[in-house]
Amino acid sequence: MLQVWGRRNSINVQKVLWLIGELGLPHEHIPAGGKFGIRDTPEFLAMNPHGHVPLIKDGETVVWESHSILRYLAAQYGGSHFWDEDAGRRSQADRWMDWSQSSLQPAFIAGVFWNFYRTPEALRDLKKIEENIQLCMQYFQLLDGVLSKSPFLAGGSLTLADIPAGTLLYRYFELDIPHPDVPNVTAWYERLQLQPAYREHVMLPFDELRGRLSF
Image 1 (tube, rainbow, N blue to C red):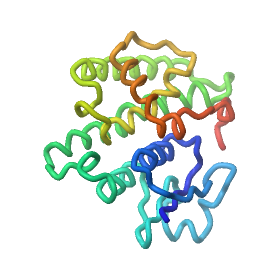
Image 2: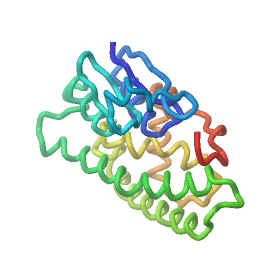
Image 3: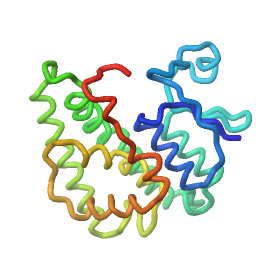
Image 4: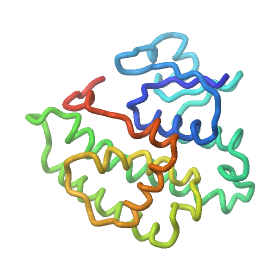
């Protein structure tokens, strides 16, 4: 059976569990990281020398790094819907996955969620928070333009393109911060909420992370 290591309130773990849910894959979830430990054990480091989650083991195959895991699962189990045989069409999802990892996620998770939500109020860098709130607004306005042309980022149905950025939406809209007027992003978010796997694995309380620089 597929095994998944990580803590459920980790954004990167949520991406993986969401796709596993979409694919209907039986799996064993092993809590790891934060209060669960395990990441610094010899057994775990033998699988991932970086000691990070998420990590999956599928038979004899071990994969780490969330987007590598997403691509592996899609290629192995996703069929043509999640892993198009045409490299050009498949690159549509790749582009959005890489953009989310390199642009949107650093601005929101590192720039806003950590600096605003996870940092105690007395230690917050208000200038940095405001800069990243504005950057997130720009990014979501960009997405709004793309989503004005199609219901999902790579066309008419859910693909790997939607998972990295879509996983951020729940926390983004739940935070008490300014949000831009992005009706197409809002409609996309509402469509994602119709997916049972999204509700199960992404829309989870994160109160225990408030004001905590470590977990």
